[in-house]
Image 1 (cartoon, rainbow, N blue to C red):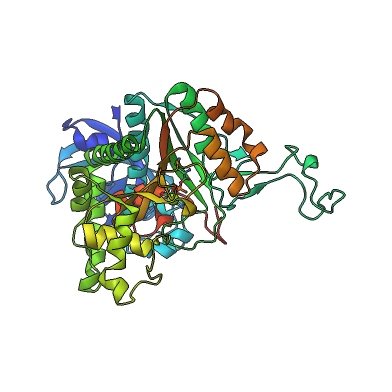
Image 2 (image 1 turned 120 degrees about the horizontal axis):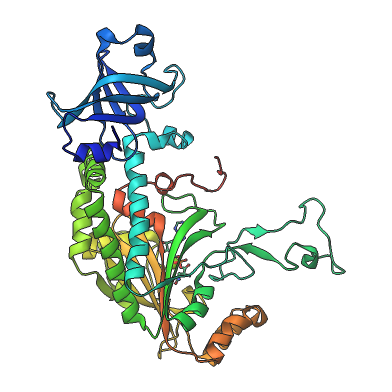
Length: 477
Ligand code: 4AD
Ligand code: MG
């Protein structure tokens, strides 16, 4: 007797062998046909029960959601929709599932309802497919970097620095909020706190990754990051995972090449490994699109979009060119943008990014050389002294998926920038040391993992591609 997963069984040709399988009942039809799923694949295996020789008491307990152990013979299927099935010889109910109470019934549930039942939603086809793809993408990312000579580097999660300088941090403290110790000036005395200083959850591992790149050459982080921004959108989480490669001696062009090759590689690996799941989600999205008005439907199916990204070059466009396009485009002239584009220097909103990608270029776009004053302090200043060597990768349906830059490697320029932004230089002494001792050109970027999963699965809401989403006013489970 062999013990295998359903994925393995469906791929095997061990007909007429005795098999043993455990899983959860998806449906039980005509007192005879169990659709059984064990999570190993989106496909169920059909198990045919000999109801005449099975006790009534047992048959009653075969309900949606119940865990069962089945022994039987693998045979070629007579029915439509599957090639093999199991003729059941023995069935044991491992765990009952009261049909009156079990929330996940074999019918269509709204994503909102499933979010409230996030601990059970992985038992649906859609969420199991999304989470298998998420796991595969994660593996593909480690595989890509490892095979390309990068070292994985674990950036600290608790830190004293604010890498992005945006002040959107969750404080970490063991001081009780109701009895904060004050110093002579009446301010909170952080010397009494656990770390003896103010600390927060990291918004990015970049600064630490830079120090590692300046020793190991090519490194990447892949860890959780936290942002206390009050953004209730379909693309923002308070806790998300970010991949941040950092490479010594790379300039901005090398950085763009790396980002493009990396994204194409991980998507194409996942397309190959998760065919059934992508096919299922492709179908799901097509059905969903049909419910939208014709002018809001996307021109490509999920599969077409994924193949398009893998097969085509990303369009590289400077910020200045982009502003020209946006200033003169129809929606801007007709005042259709919520944030009209009037002049050079404007920060781009997601409506502008999506116009460039979806309407104008109709392909992924890498925007580069942004105005210095809308980007973080660490980006390398161009000779025009107005723009920095920043790059954002913009994707259809998503907007910004990657943000990165060539870093300012000149100590004096970096110090001026830090002073101009009123950042305390002393806090960054260790970061500045990399510019003092053996400084060199280097570059990196951050890819928002959930936005990549969103793109690959075609899911509209970022809350549906992370197991337990954290967003403003919500940290359930
Ligand atoms: O553009 P960001 O803020 O860049 C950085 O943090 C740099 N330190 C990265 C680097 O150069 N090493 O964030 C990078 C990416 C964004 O492009 C986006 O995909 C994702 O992280 N991201 C978020 N994803 C989900 N929820 C949020 N609140 C996000 N904020 C950023
Ligand atoms: Mg950004």
